[in-house]
Length: 363
Ligand SMILES: *[C@@H]1O[C@H](CO)[C@@H](O)[C@H](O)[C@H]1NC(C)=O
Ligand SMILES: *[C@@H]1O[C@H](CO)[C@@H](O)[C@H](O)[C@H]1NC(C)=O
Ligand SMILES: *[C@@H]1O[C@H](CO)[C@@H](O)[C@H](O)[C@H]1NC(C)=O
Ligand SMILES: *[C@@H]1O[C@H](CO)[C@@H](O)[C@H](O)[C@H]1NC(C)=O
Ligand SMILES: *[C@@H]1O[C@H](CO)[C@@H](O)[C@H](O)[C@H]1NC(C)=O
Ligand SMILES: *[C@@H]1O[C@H](CO)[C@@H](O)[C@H](O)[C@H]1NC(C)=O
Image (cartoon, rainbow, N blue to C red):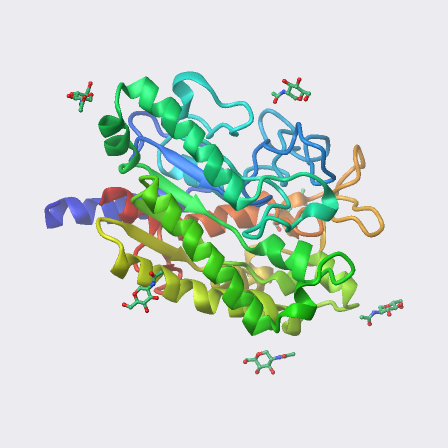
């Protein structure tokens, strides 16, 4: 790419990412396809039809989403949805549970609420699609793409042009390590050892994704788990629980970024990038008043005693855009717009490593 074209792209990246309103870009997307792996932060309906308490396909979820409740754990769009729009797609990426036909060529969303890097993670809530199972589901999609495109060579060429994002690890803490009544991991491992064990398994899963043909991969770091309304309530605290952040997100991220570096060094023809959810979220918290977030320590919807999701059909808070959190764990749409915008077009040097999503798309 010439340096003039590169400059133009940088300008376009910034213009696209600062727009806070609903928009769909007309014309070709920047990459032909986007595949999404993750948990409730990215799920767009994969848990709707499985037996689990981790569901969100009922009101008031989706109150700000055009088609209402869909299985997204938010009032509106998830960060994945916003990345889809910034990449220039004309529609959201369908969940694996219902995706079919030619649509899968644009990408598939495999994310499942309560899922983790470890297979057992989230089991106290019911069924969920673990990262290992999400990778098996991706294999199913690949064979469908081979059929659609005629042979394996053209499928591999095609899959190498897509963007992939992977956001895993939250539930391995929230719905595993920090639940000693249901899981033994906190008795087996120190926080450091547990982060090592998780990263070891995650590195194999990311290498598998590469084996299956992914070449442009966004690895999403953990946000500050100790700042969620649920953790605040459990610790009777009004501000972030430092010990929780130290023992989970910070240890995990400190190993994840070097893993991304190693994967880039060790595998050929591939670009993994790390996006710094933690730093961006901290920035939003620090600047909450000037950004118009009046409430940062409780969710907007009514959550039941001991529950983390919204109670069905209860009227949520009046002004959703003043709340950082929608329920006891998941941000409202407005911080998602800021976070996804900075993943897409980095505003600070530490937002993304080594490049941002806009640059990744242009490779
Ligand atoms: C949902 O589950 C039911 C019962 O297992 C099944 O008959 C139906 O086909 C499923 N629908 C989707 C969209 O997965
Ligand atoms: C695969 O399909 C493409 C497009 O139809 C074709 O050009 C190519 O020759 C095929 N390759 C093989 C090995 O069959
Ligand atoms: C929080 O407060 C409740 C009720 O006052 C108390 O039962 C509980 O032990 C407290 N938890 C912590 C972690 O301090
Ligand atoms: C958390 O980690 C920081 C930096 O290592 C340290 O200064 C702080 O004391 C830790 N806090 C707790 C509660 O462990
Ligand atoms: C990559 O290579 C480095 C040495 O260059 C090695 O220490 C590391 O374990 C390797 N990582 C992976 C994920 O293969
Ligand atoms: C809702 O909150 C936003 C952000 O603080 C503010 O700009 C807006 O005026 C509020 N709307 C209402 C109706 O209070």
